[in-house]
Picture 1: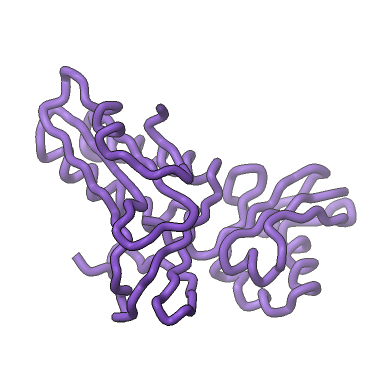
Picture 2: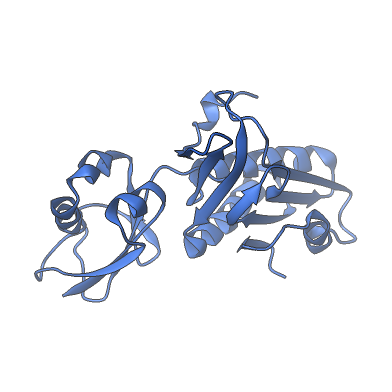
Length: 81
Length: 146
């Protein structure tokens, strides 16, 4: 299946993209997608605990099963206002 | 004009005030967040770059407004946040609250800006006069100075 990942702020800079599509095996979960990202850019590994991940517009858990076409948004600690 | 927005265009508090104020409005409080020249750690700032997950940020603004109504009673709220490159003196965020009486307007406005800073998926990178830049995270509301 194909999942789109969108990244913001520090994570966008570290990953080198604001959005990118990834092929994942069927049955993959949010945490598996994160592991694929870490494999490409190990520097983000320590940021998982402080990163919220939204799936299709709603913040979700790492154990959530992904479906083809899902969009994951990587949300680092916020700084608005 | 929507009450809740994330925009690359300069913000106008008067526009938001007109959005929320009607003949039920006995009080109106406006908070404007401004880009200041000195960072919390004392460095000279030349500007800020904001980015946002726009869809989620607007949904969060709407949720904050609902919660404010539950906590402080009926009130009308508008929240606009700027994104893109801002220089010192520009307005980054405007929160406007209108209600029948003053207590709810002050309380709801304070609640809304604190909640926005804590939760809304918006990020800022400070640019300093010395040419360096740094992503700046908000501290938790409980730890923030008054």
